[in-house]
Amino acid sequence: MQRQNSLLYRSAKSLLWLFSKSCKKKISVHKETPMTAAVKTSPSIASQLVNGILAIKPLANFAKHQARQMIIKRAENIGVHWTQEVEKLKARSWNSDFAQVQNPQVSYPEYYLKPFHAYEKSNLSWEAALEVEVAAKAVHAKIWQEAGINGDAQLRQSYHDVVKAQIPDSPKDIIDLGCSVGMSTFALQAVYPQAQITGVDLSPYFLAVAHYRTQQRQAKINWVHAAAESTGIADNSFDLGSMCLICHELPQSATRQIFTEVRRLLRPGGHLTIMDMNPQAEAYKKMPPYVFTLLKSTEPYLDDYFTLDIAQTLVEAGFNSPTITPNSPRHRTIIARVRD
Ligand SMILES: C[S@@+](CC[C@H](N)C(=O)[O-])C[C@H]1O[C@@H](n2cnc3c(N)ncnc32)[C@H](O)[C@@H]1O
Image (tube, rainbow, N blue to C red):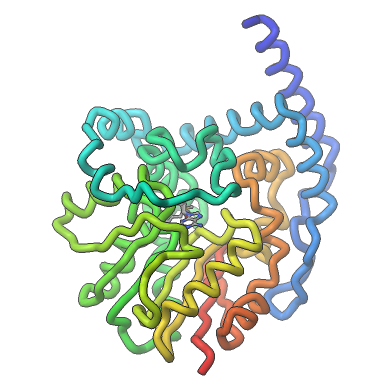
């Protein structure tokens, strides 16, 4: 059995290697030029090719394994002690945090149950929850040359710089949709210390970590275990809704529903701000095929995100036409005001 597995593993490796060699040019994920260009609403040929490769289970498993190893190695290289940090968190008892955030009535949409980020049990596991922080630091370490361990903080700062420049009034009530373990929520709190902040996420495991971090920081944040499509929160409750790095994890239908829900939650004059991958960034156009394949193996809805006309979707959900501003070599900030 072990021999068979190792044979499969080696075949998968050779096939992926051959695939990446056969793409002589760098993969072009999206050919349009910045911001003014029409959105390409079907996946590129390269992306379809990669989908074909990833439909073969041993290849998909191999790609996920490689993606994970690449990130762990990068973490250790930049001084994020992945194994040590995760072991420290594993040693805690999480029962109380979990009990305080979990809403047993929540039902999970089917798309959320798919394996994500190389975790078989998706975001609904301790394995995923306890690795979120180290993984974010590693993934964002190379956005700017020399950023290293500060890349994640720099990315969030670049988002908030755009938001503050375009929305001069400080929001009083903020909702962070897809808040995960709270990294985006605490970053918002640092920018708007006077605001009341609510974080919503579908993973009670992630929210348990967020709850623990809130206690450590002696902060006050209202964590809500719910689907962002249907939060159960009253109409007109917030001045600002933030969706940070969540849209690329959603099928288009879920993004549409969440925009409609945020529109309901926002007060007149309120804003929805979104920060996520920029499909039109040169960095994605130039991404080596092998790395693109590894990325796609861990992100099941990347095609949905890259081919969504997000500006049009926001208008359809009741917002004014948004501004779209690149805030890193790979990310964009989208700001939409509630339509009067
Ligand atoms: C990549 S993480 C981003 C986390 C965080 N905003 C940040 O910037 O670090 C995406 C998060 O969205 C959550 N999520 C995905 N779909 C969701 C949904 N429909 N409702 C609520 N949360 C969702 C996931 O559980 C995950 O925590």
